[in-house]
Image (cartoon, rainbow, N blue to C red; front, side):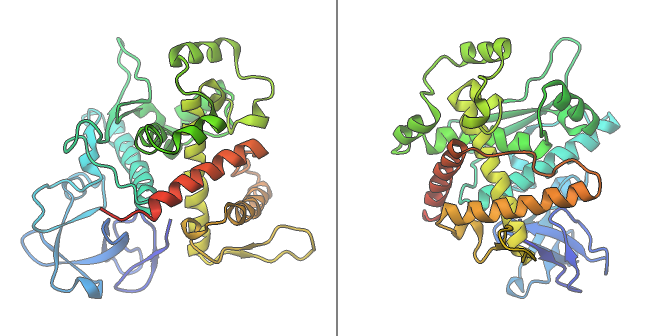
Length: 356
């Protein structure tokens, strides 16, 4: 994630902010420019950006920004749609007559926008299913009913998220019940997007053969593999071969878990780079950190990995100092690193591809 600043007063702001806490300026995200901008009203519901290069242009708030404060993305004033490109991807939202559902929906949309920022950085802007039902992406945010339990998952571009995942207490309970070291709302979005991009980037491409060498044959029966996993658990040596125990269930899940982990790494490293973060240890043979290039401009996976291990060492040390669990509770084996390197190579191929 990049760092952002108010165009009016220079105050540092977050990607999710809708208002500058220093000067009160209204903020909005311009996805095409990948920038948070400060806006001034220009009459009739239109807004004027304070970014110099946008002089003379007019914008409007996404309708979910203007009416529900559930978004902070902007559209060109002459855009035919009233929904931004992020909200266009959401096909179903929960019943908003329930006040908690409104809160959950806002959290879900915020996590989705974080995912979309990473995908834009990878040159992987998804097409909405409204535009292309065969290859497009869509989200449904659903809640359990007495008659049906919602399963978070992916099917041919449709990503379903159980809104219970937006409740931290319920998510933590699920994490403990499933003996997971880590469970976040953003992590679900990253994982499910991995299934979508497996179909887009790996299937029927030159990447399929090397994928099978690393992850295994995805043609094995998926339902049977999952049933075996839930009945017997992961193999005893799973930590030597997989990024998570669930990744051991099937090559599709291995890819999705590793893809999610790669996005986790890239986004965090980009944040460290954008903040100018460096580490200069006082003693020799301690990890150093000097991110000299954007992570997705780093062709050397070894360089990226070195920076990652240095950064996570400090993150975990800081968390332990304030009595919190490790920010990064993972130990990556050589085989997992090879899989992450493969995904890095796939990602770089998309990053250097012409933008459409």
